[in-house]
Image 1 (cartoon, helix red, strand yellow):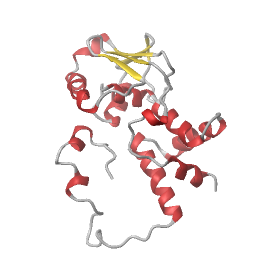
Image 2 (tube, rainbow, N blue to C red; image 1 turned 60 degrees about the horizontal axis):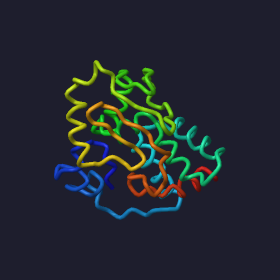
Image 3 (tube, rainbow, N blue to C red; image 1 turned 90 degrees about the horizontal axis):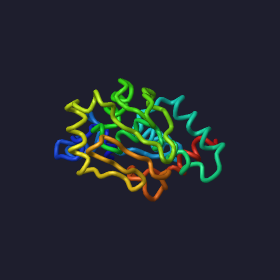
Image 4 (cartoon, rainbow, N blue to C red; image 1 turned 30 degrees about the vertical axis):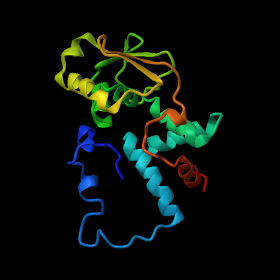
Length: 193
């Protein structure tokens, strides 16, 4: 299944999932017997790898979502979408989540006028994420912004391309999220054992 981890490559014919949609090796095309635990674990791993998190980080986000009001699975995905590296990727400043994480880590972004270099920083509604003036000439960022038109910007975000600035209008709603079809209830079932 496509997780879009390779940036623009996943939108072309060179995508590995398109070319060879089975596991590597001699027995890759064999039969796999799936169990309930296996499908739950696979879904958790898929979400974890899509957002580029380690197990302890993911577990902390799950516990935070479990303590909050609302449906735990949807709240978990909303928390993951609110991360600064995810916002930078969604706004199109990075072509992949890992590149967006690297750009945040290198200190290219300001949140409400203050430099933030922590990828896990949780952005709130009406926060303004902007590129630092020194970083506006970086070619990788400009190339990614040109490619954002293919991917599109979600409706809960607003991008001002000329000012290198994006605004979080509201919190994302599950229906508005453009993530792959995650089945978050499987993650809740896995962690509730």
